[in-house]
Length: 374
Image 1 (cartoon, rainbow, N blue to C red):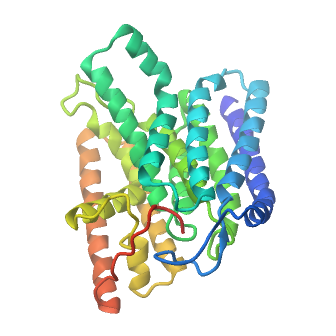
Image 2 (image 1 turned 180 degrees about the vertical axis):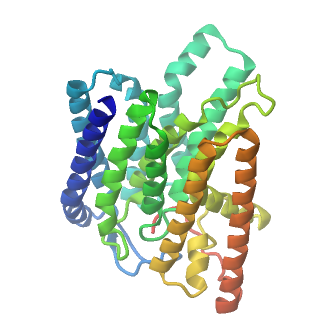
Image 3 (image 1 turned 90 degrees about the vertical axis):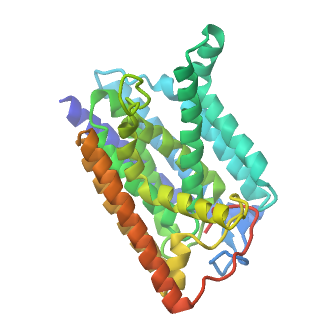
């Protein structure tokens, strides 16, 4: 009975978020043009027309509406108290990141990497504050402080990885739908119902945004939307890694990270790959370039839509392996991770071979003051 009620509440939240996104996106497009919050073509950007940048605003409104319905209905229908108040700091942190991204969208390309990173740290700090305040008051062991450092790194890595993947129409939003949907499949316990419902709401909001962004883009998420989604991605996937840094385990519970890393595999791998290339080539890691897998596929002869569909397919494969890894024991998790890593290396090598055959040597890097954006 409980499961039936959960599904009913989740379905209502999904429907409201989806419908709201479909309704408000045209309004966001008109307001963005009127206020000049747009992305202009040029440089490494692949779009050819001036495009509104307030898709993230529409996603936020849709998520808030879906969340309001879910909170109201769950309080009325469910016997279990889902303690919605406990995620107040999560919601506050996500709004900080949304605000930082929105400022960058409004003052296009004028915000440097450093203030954006500081804003991200502040947003994650808001989320961490209840635990940090206790540690500051009562002290803590080295492993507790190390865990807080990992927590900060986890959020910054995922937020920026998904922001990096917002470089082609539909890519980041589609990969996010895949990762959130995988989360819905494994968040089936009573303790995880709250996170599962949030994931359902965000899937609905993103699906309502996608028709306006893929295959032809009439509006972009902007940094506000991509960082907001990345923040919630980091929080929801965090439910899967319980047991990490358990000092009683031989690997400190590192195998608990593997399912979540695989589920977010394509954005994480692509970000790690381009950052590594920038280190090797002695370029600043925060300057955008055209060496992402999506760009290499286009230079290899695929259309932008085909490149996105290929990367969605890779995302589905890795997410499926990640779901399998949730049920695997420690050695098999490492085996699945190793096999997936080798698979992605082979795919990357193939993409680079196709690119070289079709296009010759990759085009020179076109520096830009920000990463992300289609």
